[in-house]
Image (cartoon, rainbow, N blue to C red; front, side, top):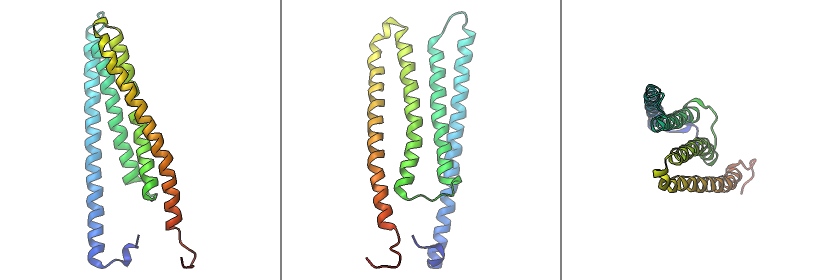
Length: 179
């Protein structure tokens, strides 16, 4: 990529404006994700309050609801944190395939953990009510989905490493020698 100083002035100005707009949009999106996460935490506390007020009767539905809100909140907050770390805070400029793999791997870790917690929540919820055993198929479908996403993620990581190596070879300077 050419240095910014090698560009014509009008392109350089457009590049600076787009960089500023891009940062502003990232900050707005990150702020929205943080607000959504905070609201989900509020909903989790509200569900937990309903559960505690119902004691000594156990209200498993509202307790599982609180777990679900907390799980989604942590996933949304981690996405905001990943966007901040990778796009705004990090001064490390990785090549495109490596950056994409790194970003996806960080986000997929959160998604996999969140889906696993959701799966366990579904199993606990449906196993405590005999009239809801039929919903265990939905829990099994979530488990199958988790397994498929994990396999796809592993395949993506395996194939993207070779793309990264290829890109490094093709973009490496030739030490003054011609091709």
